[in-house]
Image 1 (cartoon, rainbow, N blue to C red):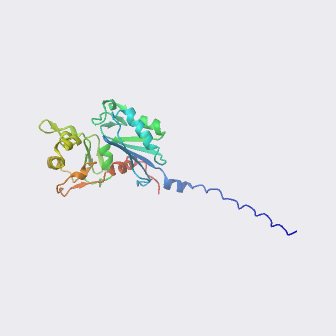
Image 2 (image 1 turned 180 degrees about the vertical axis):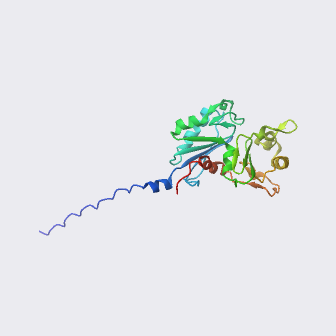
Image 3 (image 1 turned 180 degrees about the horizontal axis):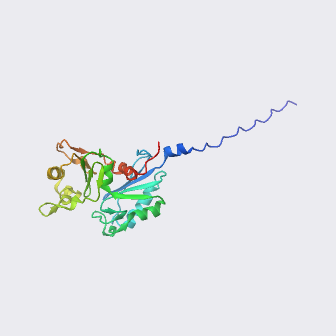
Length: 261
């Protein structure tokens, strides 16, 4: 009988190599950045150097936009993203130590709502919450002199910085501006729908003319979903920014916990 070939021995599969502490530091901490808006909820995960690790995800803001409804929508949105170690949130209203005090374009139930604590319960991760315009500014400012951010969306957000330091909760949108109207009444989404793009753009121009000699900012950054509709030549110190800055700025909320190189 012919000799049978000896059975081949199985080649052992090497175990996955464990990451060294240095390699772990190079990939973490990852920041879940959330932007809560009057019309949309957006989120993405940022790497340890503040760059996006995935595509931005967006869902419509539920109506009525109660805390319970918004948190449920965020829970579903977060499931579509990768892992993270901490959470940054931009919120459209006054925020005090994670507690939302006002939310004029969401729902009255946000008054004195501990958003930071509720998101911590949901994610089991540390959470930091800031006014949404404030977060957006951290994604674009240069950190020199007086800089201002105006966001044009459902309402009008505003943030002020002095040498890179944020002045919290500047609610310029609700200050009287044109007769009995406020800035937000003049350039918010409702005004855009009422008067049309051309006239609305003129309103934005007047707002900039009003702000310049009062605040004398070195730079003004225009963000928000409606900033792209502006059709006049901007002053030299005014720039339209990408709307994703509202998420990228979330990395700066943790700048006091710098990553070792």
